[in-house]
Length: 332
Image 1 (cartoon, rainbow, N blue to C red):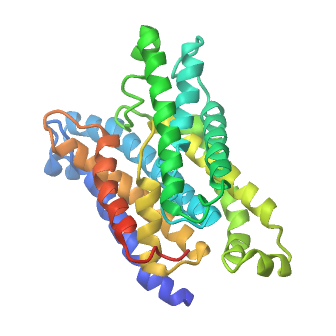
Image 2 (tube, helix red, strand yellow):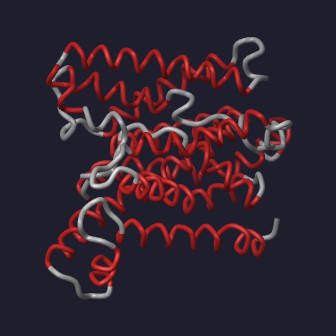
């Protein structure tokens, strides 16, 4: 696929969708500031309440959602490329649960959501990813993408149950993470993004470093070796990038399932299986999906808000069923 085709089939449509949902995120909310008042702020006017709502609440929330969407979209694409499995996704394979469990464990030991650094979530995501990929090496599992997802679901269930036990045994920990564990960008400010920015940037850098070699690995390990790449080293770099990206996203917004499944699936439908093209589209579609889910979460239960994690699950579950029921899984 030529660069021109990628631009017109992928980048421009994805960019247009992202621009629309960014405007919607700034204009729509569960409170009394509706689209008309919010849009007046965006053009330089508006009353004091509308300016406060848009600039102090919705703008930081939107920026954090964009960062989280980029991280999860790229992490999903990398994970699917490494495992050669279109069902691989940070939430389904337990990486998000591992990151969340690590944070809850540290808080139960005396920390707090405000002081726990993203490195804790990164370590939790990395350990969970290694456990699931180790399970994929069992006889027969690596050839069956559904069984790999089942292994990830089992790990997610185990970590989720253990996390619940910790919360039940420690009321202080439960109070600290009650809203964080369900996944949300509401109430997040730019200091949240500043705290996870180093992990996020490092993950993005590693993704760029690994992208060309991953494209070669898609042709087979022998071809990649012939082109001068080291498959084990490339996969290690890609998995490290996934750990940093998932850890940063989870530390900022809590565990959000299915974003890493929906975004690469849509990106490949637009520009094909080349990981280099897919990653570029994921940087636009990832934020668009998270922002769209966040906008929906504000509207379905007004004047209250639904959990963002619940909305992403409602969006992603049908996509998972679509992929599983397909007669042939999309090639990567």
